[in-house]
Image (cartoon, rainbow, N blue to C red; front, side):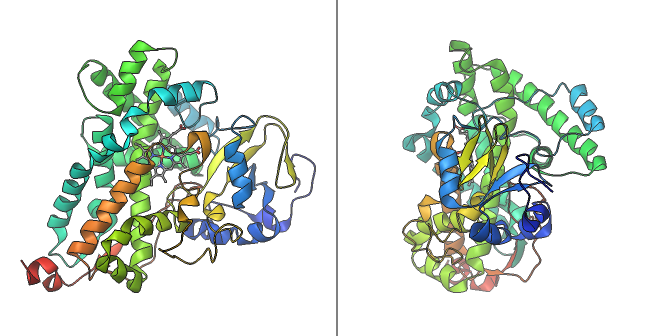
Length: 426
Ligand code: HEM
């Protein structure tokens, strides 16, 4: 096989397939060969240029004029005709939000919408997050065994996200199913039969987002980030446009909950599989923020992000032609020994963990990163205090096959309820 530039593709590059098991299990490991030997390569199976080293990925993030984010939410597997017909039936019109908007529109919009993310504004949500985590813990604390993903890791971040956005909390199970459809639709490779089913879910999600938006627009006194957007849409409709509102309504529900849910599950998995580290956190809870950051580096929930070259441009000595689609495997960058010492080790004392690229970098860097961090911190604080003797069960982890969102679909843990500190020391 050949790249669009006419250059031959190496056998490993030809074989690279992010929908297969090695990448799903451990994307950084699956690209070790690339970091070491061929850090920028064309993947004929994907039709993307794959970039795996830290410095190269950071350089792409830094130059968002040459490397446009416009394809960040594009379907990575083009829709079949049948799926396309389903989407059209639902009048599906997902377009630019923030994450896939070019300059200068992006910065003008981002600047208008920053207020909800000030440290004070975020801190105001902390008591709600803690209450939600405590209620969920109360429900299982005497059980001795639980799948934490099913019990709380997706539902708490979803509730927090809806609250943050001001979206009424209804039909959480349905929203969860919509989110999975959106992830598969955008970053997965559904089979032709699955494509139609996924398109149904996405179409319904789009309609639902429109209805919720309309309801919110009719209630001008609500609180939350979506209400900030609705107000800006009234004041500056050319900056915060109508289509933006509808697209964002759908995209942000996923961006604000799926990412955090998966990051929390990854962090618990990593920490509990190292009992000495877990014990250290139980003894010294002030280590929790640094541990959460190191988990985001070591096993982030977003593992790859996309850009498109708007002109011929060089990355790591390779010329990516105009129109070249790029998959930056940030999970691989986070394990690059050129930037992180002993990168495969989970080291909660690492002094540059925060340099990780799990939240992206540069002008589009995640706006919600401190909300996500806060949720992870509170989960860890409550669990280390109330269930310090928690243990990870032997289990085989499964993942939703896709390029970008990663976390175990279930996380089984067990503990001895009679050892709960609140039982021993009520
Ligand atoms: C953008 C990851 C949580 C809202 C992004 C990007 C990534 C990301 C990779 C793209 C960055 C880039 O292109 O440079 C994550 C992870 C999270 C998380 C790993 C949790 C652990 C959240 C939450 C919210 C949120 C809780 C919402 C309240 C956004 C927004 C953008 C964004 C609005 C677009 C920013 C822009 O383009 O200017 N996030 N995110 N994220 N995220 Fe997050």
